[in-house]
Image (tube, rainbow, N blue to C red; front, side):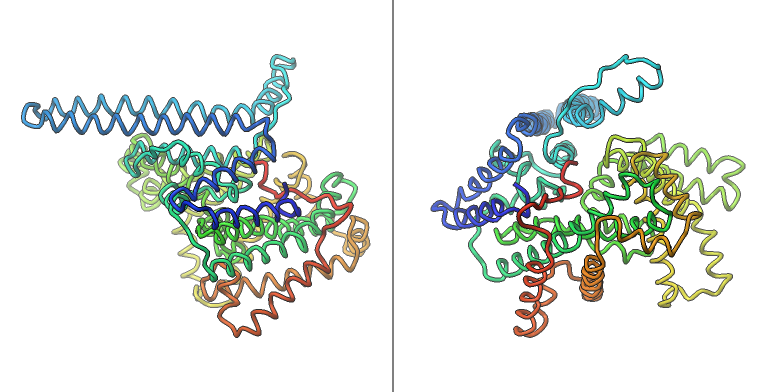
Length: 536
């Protein structure tokens, strides 16, 4: 049931109608639960076992963790006047040890399922190549829809319950809805329980503005997906399937085209998902905020797949950076002879955060896929961020020495271009067949430039001049909308155009609909391209 299919339109319309007409507002959420599991089973009922397993084990573990915590609090209260400080400490340590074992068990089980299904063949193939034999068999494994998203979301919930940040959900079916909510299952966002759950369970009534903004956001998403992303993907797939047959000029052009296609595809999916939820009265977390306006690679990752970044920060970065091992290493370096120097004092201070950032991006790289090129993708981003943290004083001294006005338009533009180039290099690891291919494509893009031949080649990769005209117009529209959103700090398309007169709003919507009808890639014989993050 593709987001761009008629079946999906009918499904969303039916769910919305039943949801708001449901007689019992107290149990209105059950419509969303039924719809979510219908959607999931429709997409692949054979693999529904895995999301059920994650849901049940996480719910049980959360309930158990909370009962242990409550029992511990009751026991401490009962012995308030009997136990001395040492006895209380010993009891608390025993309780925490029990909770940690429970947390470790559910994390190992669910992340173990994800690692096995997504990475087993990658690891087996690497080991077989290393040993020069078929020591481990290559299995025909199917990846459940959205397994990375629902695994990360459920494990984030479990860690929050363990930390005491939230109370465990007592109702299994309500918890099942939190894990399976259909607008987010394809490509996120990875929602926090504290942000989403209450909205799912509380009753909602139809609201005109929510319907209006939700539909406008969906329409904006379909424009980016059908007019831009699904048109550009043809040329990208043609060149990357046999990149050695093309000049470096064409490879560089396709990498730039991929930057547009990925931006349009990912943001479109997020907009459609958020738009559907908004119509239902639910505000999902913003997951994408104009990343190409970023002035540093750090800022780029705070704007791109925002909820993944927040998840990584809360559950990997902080635990690693603030661990005794990392803080201790920084303190030991500070006490050393090197640590007494100006450079050493700075490095010892930022060592925990810089190394933790590198580890986070290694995980992000692996999250993107089971291939060595994604490890390189993570290393590239992680090393750039690590070096930016470590060398920050050097860069600041250069800026001072060169008398650069850091708030000038020229400097901001330079920073955005520089960041985009760094990001673009990382994209080669996305589109290349493997790590060696990515390196070769980057090399060719630099040394193998033939502008005249490149111009003729771009007409042999599946697109006509009319297609490039459409892509150029689409790019200009996205650019104009993004500039206005950036200036006004808005994330919704409807909220942006609503600031203008009604006539202008209707004109925008009419033009958007006509552009989708005339220029959209759809219809008989059309094989819709999956959203980039769909099988994550």
